[in-house]
Image (tube, rainbow, N blue to C red; front, side, top):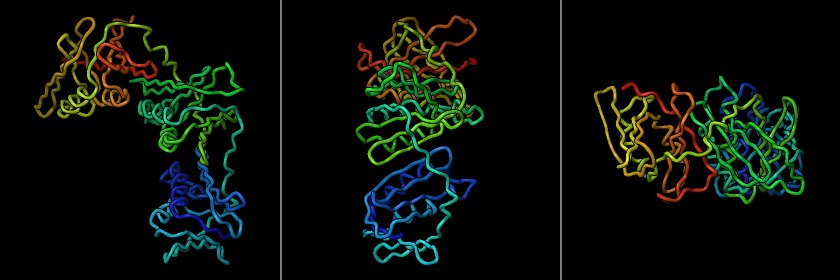
Length: 383
């Protein structure tokens, strides 16, 4: 095997395929990157039984063949090579020789025959705008749980219904939902389709494909090997779906309520960041939404206290409640609008605090599009 390839193109391709691999893999063989040189150029792939990444790039192939080499080491080397074409060849002893300008590396090859087959996807697919999909992931994925004790909550639920794709995530304390257009093409079905995708994998997909045109999303497999594939340009990422029933959190969103406050997003963010400095990590921040604005009051364990107020409009009665400041800040960052509406919902259970609904607002008087919603459960205030 022997080929020549552009340094920048090769480095970007290797970096892409190793991003989804875990830092420490219990099976050393899965730390490898599979490189196939043939008539179509160079195909690089990585797979750890849960997620895979594959890309094809142009290269001058002198001798076709397949090699398997340690991925992160190759990525580190490729990113630091001099500005010159790369040549990779296999020597008589099976070692991998990498030459770039005056730099020369000899790398150990890994057994190709022991590497698992990269998943192929041939199921139903649709298209979504890359920029909107990346934005939607950023607005939702942070609300997924990081606790592996409940795997279904570590994922983002993708649901296709007609011409809309919705993304939903929850960690029991909050729910984030965003909808974007879905183009199912001529084979579009009216039957709803859902897939529970690991949040970490989906976040990498958003970062990788953010600046493309459209992303093709395909559902495939059955039983314990259901997978989803994301493709754009010359890149494809697949992910094994999380098994289990995602909680029916959509029903938690209120149909309509007029009891709300509208506040400048940036002003509230800055005030919350300042006041929360005196709080313990898990302590709630006291908010009072009144006719003159919203005031914040924080008392810390080091005999420190902070208060601040920002302008806001209120429709309805004054409200005092406790909110997790970090959870609120994450929602304000996801709103992506100049103003934010905080709606106070009602509950049939008098002994349970009602969640607040956070949505975009284009101005003080005008609501934003209803494609993003964030529901946050208040904390019990002890004083």
